[in-house]
Amino acid sequence: MTSRIPIILDGDPGHDDAIAWMLAKANDKLEILACTSVSGNQSIEKTSYNARRVMTLLGIDAPFAMGRERPLFGEPVHAGNIHGDTGLDGPALPEPAFEALPLSAVELMAKTITDSSEPVTIVATGPLTNVGALLILHPELKPKIAQISIMGGGLDHGNWTPAAEFNILVDPEAADVVFKSGLSLTMAGLDVTLKALVFPEDFERIRALGNPIATVVAEWLDFFYGFHRSIGYAGAPVHDAVAVAALVKPEILTIKEYFVQIETSGDFCRGATIADHYGFNGQQPNTHAVVGIDREGFIDLLAEAAAWYGKEQA
Amino acid sequence: MNPIPVILDCDPGVDDAIAFLLARQLPQLNVLAITSVAGNVGLEHTTYNALGLVEFLDWDVPVYQGASGPIFRKRVEASSVHGANGMAGFDLPHSRTTAAMPAWDAIHHIALQQQGELELIAIGPLTNLAMAFLKYADLPGLIKRIVIMGGATAAGNTTPAAEFNIYADPEAADIVFTSGVPVHMCGLDMTMKALMTPAELDQVGALGSKEAVFFRDVVQDIVGFMKRIGILGINMHDPAAVLYAADDSIFKAYPAGIRVETKGLITQGETVTDLFSDAKWQKNAFAVMDIDRDAFVMKVFELMKKY
Image (cartoon, rainbow over all chains, first blue to last red; front, side):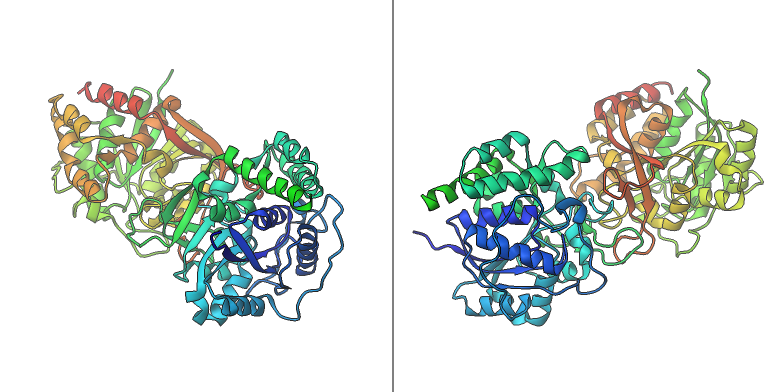
C-alpha cells in the first residue's frame, strides 16, 4: 500500500464542508491528522459543534481544536441564509463523542505539522483565518506544508458581492497572507465549484446506497439544494468537496496556472481574487486554479465515498 | 429608419482611427460631433489626430476639444502601444480648427437640440462625459444611451484588474455608470475576441483606396507589439464598440450592475460587474460579452469597400 497524504481539515461546517470531510475520510489516499474549525458559514461555536458532530458521525478519530471567534481583522460574517440557523440544518446528527482540545486551531495545526514525519497538506474549506494566522506565527513550518488546497475565490466574479466569494470576503487579510506565502496553492473557486453541481437524481443515487452516512449525505444535499433552487440553480454546488477532489482525483479537473492577488481594500473589491488573466503583467504564477470539472466523475467520486461507509460497517 | 444621432468621444489613438474609418461609412449613425480627450496620448495629440482624421476622410463634422487629463489623478497614457503621437508616427496634417465650445458644453448643447434622441459613443477615458454630467443636471434625461469601449467584467489589460480607459480616469467612469443613463460596456470580454489577423489586415489594404491602405499601415506597429505579447493580430477594441452602437445584432449583451472601484490597493479602475451575485445590484448597464468575430470582419470589409 502506498503511503497516504497526511492532511489537516480546516473548515466551517457547513453542508459542503461536511460532504468534503465525508469524502476525505472515505478516501484511502488521505490520512486525516487533525481537524480545525473556523468562523464562517456560522459562528465559531456553531461551526465547532458541527465539526465535532460530523467527525463523530463519520468516525474521524483525530484531534480537534477550535478557531478564533473572528477574522484577523474586521467583524465576523455568516451565511445562515444558506446553511440554516445551526450552520448545518437538515438531518439529525449524533451528539459529539469528544471535546475540543484545550488548544487553539493554530496551535493544533502547528503541533500536527511539527510532529508529522512528512510534509502536511492543509484542506481549507472556510475563511483562511487559521491558515493565515499559522503562516504569520510559524513561518518556520512552511517547508513542512506540502500544499494548501483551498475552496475560495473566483477568477471571474464573486457570489457574496459581485467581486468577492464568501470565504475570501470574510477574511481577505488572511487570504492575502496565504496567497503571498509562496507555498503550493490549489484554488477551487467559483470558476469550478459552480460547475460542481449535484442534481436531485444524484441525491437519489446516494440515498439508494442505504447506509446511514449515505442517507445523511442525501439529506444534507436536500437541505443545501433548497436555498440554491430558490435562486435558480439546477443542483447543489458542493463547493468544498472540490478542494478534496483536487487531492484524490485531479484527473477529473481542469487546472490552470495564474498569478493571483487578494484585494483587501476598496469600495467594491474587498475580498476579490484578482488573477492576471492575460498575463500582460509578467508575474510568475502562484496558484493552481481549478477552472473545470468532469461533473459525472465528481458525482461518481462522491457516491463511491458514501458507499464506502456501508462496506466499513458491514 | 432614421440614423441615430451620436457624438463620438475619443482619444485617437490607432484603433480610434479605425473606428473613424468605420463610423464615417455606417449608415445607421449620424455623427454630429467628435470630442477629444486625453487618453492614449496627451490632448494636444488626440485633438490634432481627430482633426487630421476628419480632414483625411473629407468629413463635415465639428471637433470639440475636451479634458487634458483625469478629474482627480495624474494622467497615464498608452504611447508605448500607440506611438508618441498616438498615431504610430503617422502625421495627419490638416487645415481645420476645433469648434469654440469645450467638449462638455457641446455634448449638452447638442443633446438639447436632439430632444432626447442623442447617444454617446465614448472610446477613450470618460473624463469629458463626467464633466458634462457634473455641469448639467438635466443631461441624464437628454441622453438615450451611452456605448463605451472600456472596462471588463473579469480581467484587465493595464493591470490584472483594470482596462486602460477606465484605469485612466476611474472616478469619471463611475460618474458615468451612476448617471442614470444606460451604459453599454464594450469591454475586454468582447473586444479581446474582436481580433483581425495579419492576413485580414492585408486583405483590407489590398482594397487599394487611400483609406484602406491607411487602415492596414497604421495598425502595423501594434500588430508587432501584440505579437511580442503572444497575440497574432490586433484587437479592434474601439471599432467593435462603434459597430455595436450602430447594430448590435452580432453581439451578445446582458443586463448588469456595474460600478467602478476607485479605492482598492490593486483594483483601481476595475469595472465591478454584478451579473448574478447575491448582492443584486441595480441593473444600470449592459455588459457586452461576445461578438461573432467572422461577421465582424465581414462588416469591416463591407464598410471599407465603400471608400
